[in-house]
Image (cartoon, rainbow, N blue to C red; front, side):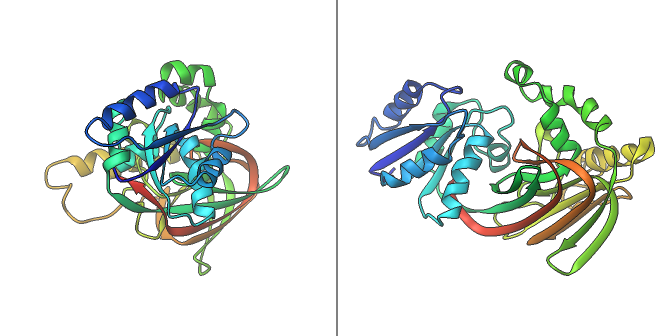
Length: 319
């Protein structure tokens, strides 16, 4: 730990500042304690303003203490400013999807803080999503996944109070309502300005990492540092279509790959009649009817248009 000034962007609803200060004191017992500044998020601002304040204060390292929303907001500021300040993560949210995919300790503040202080920085790509919403366009960074359809509707339908008590299981409770409210629509996709796809879809996702709640690997080929992101198109409505989608996600790209002789065959993600995957740098998506959009677990509102691009190696995260 060579930093002289550490900034912690803290979601006060997730952890008290004293807990992090005590953990930092414990980690600093055998060395000099760095200067510490704490910048709290608010319900109105999940971390962007706090990150800007940390950079203005001249910190050498920013550590987020919160959920995926806090990490996303801080990352957006760092990527937008092309800052070389490194990022550490103490995951304290419900999903903690980025931390799960990056192997950052969960449920252990001391271990996560130690990783943030002493880990080696690794470049991580950032996605940018431009959504045309009812109240105007919104351009946002994302680190996990962005998209439209069932997953976005599930996030929007999830009960916040249940999420606080039951964790990610609350998303399962919302899935039935999300499926009912997310009938398939016609979609036109342009990948990297060249590949054109017209398909009937109920979900389109672009991911920087692949594993979601419950350990389901939606995008087995996704890597956070390859300069690309992975596209998942889920099409076909009705019982048969959903059965094929579940089989593809849970069996073909999940359980089957863990069986003896299947996990090291060198094959990438397996597609099916209702599941198509591609790697991309840019995506233009237009829908025939509005559908709910989301970025990193935050519902944005309904849209008929998304534009996505990748900013390679935009962050340096301590791992």
